[in-house]
Image (cartoon, rainbow, N blue to C red; front, side, top):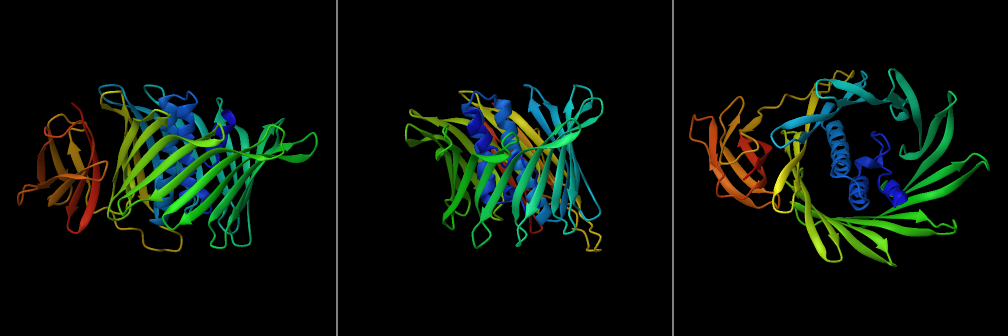
Length: 422
């Protein structure tokens, strides 16, 4: 099962860059599969949350690149029953060409941030990622691993060579190879281990991606058989856009010669096609049960600046993990003008709330607020009185859980997530 877990998080282990499959739909589905595997291999809830958070952060980086924003930092927090407590912080640095050059990971020790690990990125003359060096903190930075990137004639990622540090030299450990169809869509990723004794490559795992329709992406993970003679099915995920505002993604394990459903995930999108919420279930032969749900607050460019994950405790949803994002406008060397600042930001407090919530917006008065649950159903519409600058929302008629506030103002829309606790 550890091999299956490695397969499912193949794309998580690779650093993000403009050519990476992780910015594609298939990459996102596969990354999410790592969380499912962790849940089914006695992984802790924290492990599962970390993998799901990794998927979200990759999506944030991709969105930030397209919106000319720089993701400066993410702070992950856990709920201690009374307040959000810091856990992990990731801070990013960029060069004048806006390439990500360093990503620092720190742990919170209760009073201060402590170095844990970092990635150092270098680029080729075409501004494509060339190498990533992974370092760990042992009183000073020690290089542990290295990845070297190669591209095909179309500029698509073709190969990643992975090296380990041994006796102050890099030792070849493995490789990932990528193949694409005529439209440039990823169709396969193969992972090979390097046998230095025999100086040969040995197949380990592969992920095959197909596109049955414009609305569907399917990934099948396979492992090499014990006799190294054939590929054996391991995992399968099918992402389908079911409507303009929803999608679903069942995830399967290959067991006893058939695909067995092990999880279901439903996503909710707003009118700008930004994902604003999800609902995650774990399944077995007896059916499916709630596991995690979450939602994000986005600015008018669609970039997440706050996200909260809740865990089902058997009777109710409880706050579990939170991630806070910080961005900066990009100002390239080409003298291209940076993005205009966010026109307004929404606050809703208290959050979590038990009865009454006050919704306010900066810079101008709130005009209207629509409230949605994580299935995409609108459950309330709130209007501010002229000049009030805030909306008072009595939440007592709704059950505990996560809700999404969509605030409209001067033609702009901002989504704010809020948790109701009972």
